Image 1 (cartoon, helix red, strand yellow):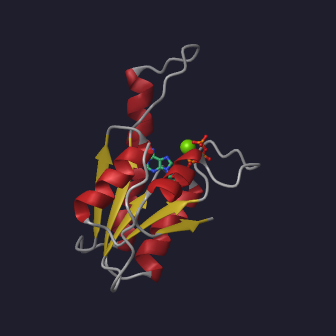
Image 2: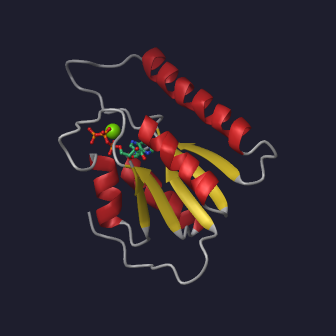
Length: 146
Ligand code: ATP
Ligand code: MG
C-alpha cells in the first residue's frame, strides 16, 4: 500500500484521531489525547476480525468482543468528556490501518495517536503491525504512546 503524501502540521493541533482497540496502550493513547492535548478527539475502533481457518469465531463471540470495547469506550467518554462536546466514538468495519487513515482523512486530522502495541502484544517487536503501518503510511504526524 502506498504512503499518503506528507501533510505536516502547520498550526495548532485541533483535530485528533486516536486508534483504539481496547488494549492498555490504546487506553493510554486516548488519555494522552484527552488529557495532554486540546482539540476535538475522534476515538476510532476498527472491527476487523481476521478469522483463522482453524479458529473461526462465532458471530456471538465477535459481538461480545465488540460489545466489551464499546462499553470501555462509553466509560471513557463518561469519565473524560461528560459534556459530550469533545470526544466522538467511531466504530467501523475494516482493516484497522485503513479505517484509521480514512477517518483521519475524513476529519482532516492534524495528528493521529496510537498505542505502541495492542491486544496481541508480541513484546519482542518494536511496534505492533497496526501502529507500524499507520506510522509508515500516514502523511500526518503520528504520536505513539507506550
Ligand atoms: P499485532 O500486530 O499482532 O496486532 P499488537 O496487537 O500488539 O500486534 P497493534 O494491533 O499494532 O499491535 O496495536 C497497536 C495500536 O494500534 C493499538 O494500541 C491501537 O492504538 C491500534 N490498533 C490496533 N488494532 C486496532 C483496531 N482494531 N482499531 C483501532 N486501532 C487499533
Ligand atoms: Mg493488534
